[in-house]
Amino acid sequence: MVIHTGLFSNMVIQRGKKNCSDQLITGSADSEGQILAAVTGINKKSRSAVTCRGTAAHGKISCRIRGLPAGGPYTITLSIQKKTHPRKSQNKMKKHEQIIVRNVLVGDVWILAGQSNMEGLGLLKDALTPHPHVRVFRVSDKWDIARDPLHELHTAVDPVHITFLGGRIPRAPHIGTGPGTAFGQRMREITRVPQGLIACAHGGTSMDHWNPDLLSKGGESLYGAMHRRFVKNGSKAAGMFWYQGCSDADALNAGEYREKMTGFINAVRRNFADPGFPVVMVQIGRVCRADSSYRYWNTVQEQQRILGTTIARVRTVPAVDLSLDDAIHISGKDQQILGRRAADAMASIVSDSRKYLPPIQPQTQKIVRNKTTGLADIVIPFQHVSGGLRSVGRVSGFSLVRAAGGSDINQIFRADINENKIILHTILSPENAVETKVCYGFGYNPVCTVYDAIGRPLPCFGPVYTEKNAVYAPMIRRMRVSAIQESARDLSGLRYPENTDNLNLTLRDFPEHFCNLHNELGSLAPKDTLVYFAVGFTCTEEMQTNICLGYDGPVKVWLDRAEVFHDPYGINPASIDKAEIPAQLRTGTHEILIALGSNHGAAWGIYLRIKRTDLSAECIQKGKDAYAVPTVRE
Image 1: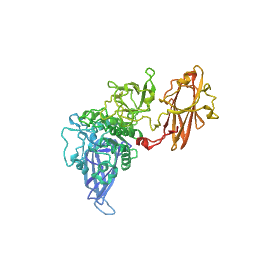
Image 2: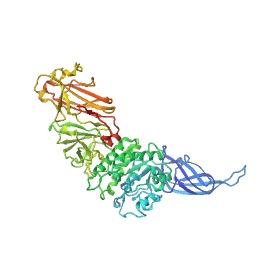
Image 3: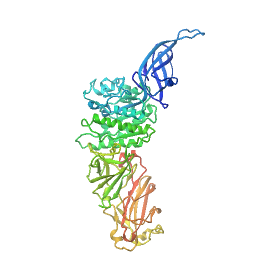
Image 4: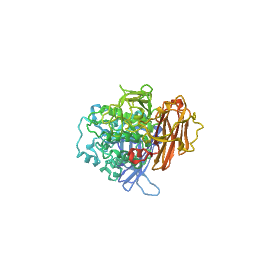
């Protein structure tokens, strides 16, 4: 009898929903008959629940062992009972072939995949002490105690690894620590059951090397090899721990990372027959490089962050704060931090406990005028923070850029922490700050110092607006302005003008984003007056938008002659996006008319821009050539 899949000495069997095995075992045998299993290492209470049903016929065996409880180790003896007398009155049975499988555990099994930082190239002197209930299925197709290096690629059964190595060439003997062992040990602490790791990573590999379309090539492709090893161990696993992306951070591939990784996750869930198969991926960390192509590195980081927020049962953990043992590989010491960090993220998917939070994520940033300096403060709240944010030394890692791929414009003079928020104090006016974008972990080798109370870092993000699925048309600084009108007090009784020609609207170009009529309105104080602003614009397609308005007095807004907003209590100061007015816009031309009360000379003007809110994250990621925004006609 030879077992091909599902049961091997020293292995970890994936537990089922009832915390017990439901493992299919296949193989070959010369005999035919019923397959029976004898298990040692199991208590009397559980023994009666263990069943083995299967047969040996036509040279093949197939059986299923159910009810083996999480834990172990177990010794399992499979035997074939063959009929010795074909008489109708007596069918005696005897054991004919058997195989003994020793030191078997039942728990959770995880796929380890990706490139070199998952393969593990940290110093071996920093490797963890092995735990007997954390095992690894090595690339040699042998189960063993999980001790680094987990990936000894020169011993691989699958030829793809030997091809990529250029032969059976061992790595240097002093390196080989990765995050897998720490991940497994931490998952054991969390779940209290044995852990198995299926080692599948290979350094220097890109998403194209992991293309699911290569499944049919089997062991001659990385995806095929990973799937073969999954099948060999019973076609069951608890999830995947993935670290890859460095090899795609270039001009040719960076922009396609999210699409490729989404396709990869979907294919794994399909080929592993588990639509909710959980994945924890690592956001690529730091690299010491001198070239100017960091925008591709940051682009991959941002796409990885977004994947952890847009695909169900996927989490992305940061690595930008971790130390290195060379120019790109995480140190053996900090690989242990990364492994535990990933395990806690996995627990936020698979555990029922609220103790485990998803990784920290930025929320919508706001630009506010600092009451003391009058300059722009950028406030960024974060979600999934445990116990508030804090910094190791001065708050570092934040940058402002004017466009994706641009350079840091060095306009932040201080960053403060207020519970779950970061406040960036800039030397920009609020009007100019809206033209910038915030990022954290900018460039190849940033210094990032912000963590929550349990030591989880902020992810790298940007350079994009952190507002989800929204893009802004430029601030509107050209509009038609009326002559000064008689007061309408708080504008409650004001109706759309019967004839706008009577308003004497004149086209004005304002030098700043704040459309400022201080000279006109302020000179009439304390008399209360009224002024109108009119803007015509065009939409080349139907779109959902918000009309974003800043104002410092009573205000009323009409869109295409219909009233859409009224604030009778408007007061200074004006601030960008003080009000956001939802508007479904059809294809064609539109007009906004805004009435502003002077508040007895204390109100001076407005900010105005339009935000589009109906775009997918994928569309936004492609850049402004992939979508349209309203265009001002004048």
